[in-house]
Image 1 (spheres, helix red, strand yellow):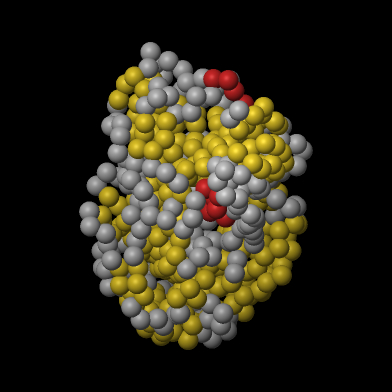
Image 2: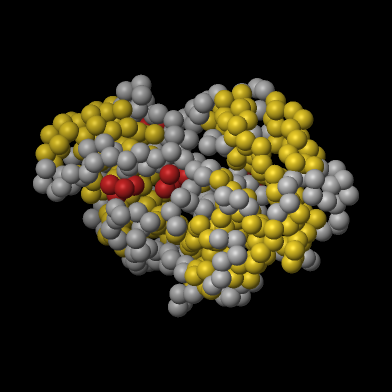
Length: 459
């Protein structure tokens, strides 16, 4: 199923599988309709790196506050010179640091950010916090930096690995992750590119195991684990001849129990070694329908296991739920996939849509929803709304130069991200949009969404 998704791949390999849309360059993950077919970062042997988040106060409803916030782009870069508007108050533009300030705001409030160069708008609904961080895709990604990392894994079964010995190697830093398999002589190489600071500081992590015919680790199969940290990679430079020595690692066994919600199908299970606060490494991708899986896992000092479960509904909706922080030898780890949102009305193909027509969907429990209205003709404006609710209308932004065109073709879909207590929480962190497909810091984290439906605007 082809899906022009909200969420584009965190790694280049995915990007050939989907088409980016209004948020496509921002959210790292795999979109519904493609989750079942495309590779998660796990499949690409890459790891997930945590992003810094910000927290701040929220005020009660009915207060009059000054809203002093920032607009950030898809890589956390500041976005300068774009309009920010709250209804009934003159709009303002972000300054060079992406900051803005609007006084005399009654809570709760809706805030709109317009990107004139992309002919699009982003709306956060129902905020009460005075310090929102608003994440906006489609802006200039900032300066792209590149470097290279090469080295050799030693120990384990090297220099003579068997035909089914697998050696995963991952580079992980807060700005970029990249993974590969070491060659039969132990050599590996990465060519990271990243945005943010010109020097990215991270580590090289390696895990070796003997796999069965299906690619799963076998009993007693873990041969070694190695880590080398505090490596600074500057733009245009190379980290060469990096040696990562494998130390013995004990094999244990983890069992889990998956509870598939009624009306949904189990698509895939993922198993990661969470080896630090900033990274993880894929071990297993299991496409069987087994709801009582058992996997051999490595006991690594300071390491835990993260399990991901993908489910799909008959409509084409899908969700990915992570259970994080399990011990390597845990028994009966409960995996309860969170149901994705499901579109209600209007049905696909409806005509005569204007800014009074209500779009509705079912809630993803404990999540904040993003509904996007994407113009098929990119010359027409597109809109995205972040809300804790289950309904929305297309915003009337004629006064901001984004009038809804007549007789125009559009598509709409809905995504959920959790756990988030509301839009105030979503406006306090960049992490929820950058970690949707990798194990997150919460004990349970999840992401899900619907396929596109189509509509035509009123003549």
